[in-house]
Length: 231
Image (cartoon, rainbow, N blue to C red; front, top):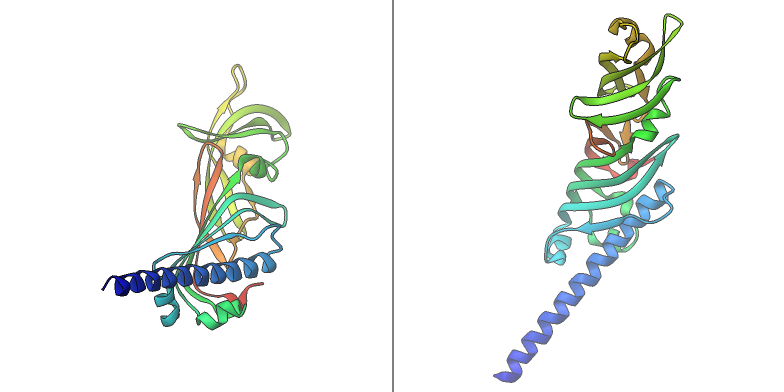
């Protein structure tokens, strides 16, 4: 009886070990695919959640896959802390272990990232000195040209997704102490600008933008994501 129990324990440990080896191999293949497609300097960390992995692999369906990319650059825009959550991923285990990750399909992809204020300022009109978060909202401070006259002011702005990126729009203005009153309508012509970040990896398009202490937290989503369609 004791020998039987020991055999069961050993078999259980072997199954667990085999399960972990298989999931690590699959995670590494997904990481390599994304790193290659987006020219990343390092492979992202991939976490196929759920235990045991092999029961998911037999079914070819993985309900929750998380990808931590970290820093990511698209054209002239750099973001930090890029994370992607995939749901209901389907792929045969043989494809994953064989490096054929192009066959992966995810029902949804939800990406989040931080766009530093310094990056946003790079697309702001000349005269912008700082962009910061405050209890009143997102503040843009600088000396702005209004009808050809440079006027120092602090402007509260909103940020929202647009067709060609996300748009920064003034909603209120406070002139510098002793300075002239500024028309918000005139200032909008000068200070409305667009940051050309339309999407994050896996075709996820921006759906929400939230100002925070260190930058803008952007959220992007995509449906029916096919790895074979990666650029």
